[in-house]
Amino acid sequence: MSPPQKSRRGFRLRYVVGAALVLLVGAGAGLWWFVFRGDAPAAVDTTAANEQLDTDLEGASAPGAAPTTGGFDGEIDGTWTVDDTLGDFTFDSASGSFAGFRVDEELVGPGAVVAVGRTGDVSGSIDIEHGDLVAATVEVDLTGLTSDRPGREGAIQRALTTDQFPTAEFSLTEPVTLPAQAARGELFAVDATGDLTVHGVTRTVVMSIEAIVRDDGVAVVTGSTDAVWDDYGVTPPSAPVVASIDDQGVIEFQLLLTS
Image (cartoon, rainbow, N blue to C red; front, side):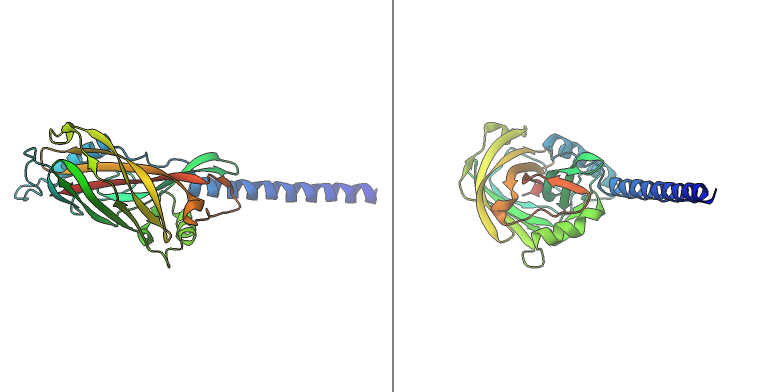
């Protein structure tokens, strides 16, 4: 009878070990799902940013608080500068000025998700003359990039080699004629051609821009462009849980400007 008992003990041992492995794998998948799950913030949207700014300013309008801007009289010519006193960049509210990227990932187990990295460390200005956008420069401190899931952040910094290339920059290279809606304080859309520098590599891109100048004199501007990572010498980060990362994504920004 000993051999059958030994066989049963061996079966039980293999069963227990197998069950433990299943539980460990499941726990690991659950942890990765918590870190990388796909509830990324929405893409930039001027209307949503404008509404969020309303909320921010209402909350800041305590008795005795000084207004942050003057009114808009229809004059758009002049220099407009990123105002870092407006809003407070967070992933949840998309408040304030920020820039970043979004890219599709395929994870082992959870499946398709959108990875997002953003930073509120943005500066820059634009110049408008006779209704034409004639200059624009936006600089982004990439060392401040955070993600909707902190587990991505170290990999993002390594992929962008931010210790060597800490900043990204967009500079307008062709003037843009702004439509009449701009001076009327209405939402408008234009394309802006310029040089985008990321990871020490500069490429000419076309930014799709939406903007509105509010009654209080704040210009809310959003923009985005597609980017192929290899064009900038960037290799997407890898991890055991990541089945694949798209070889291209979207670079986007949201700016609050005052003149």
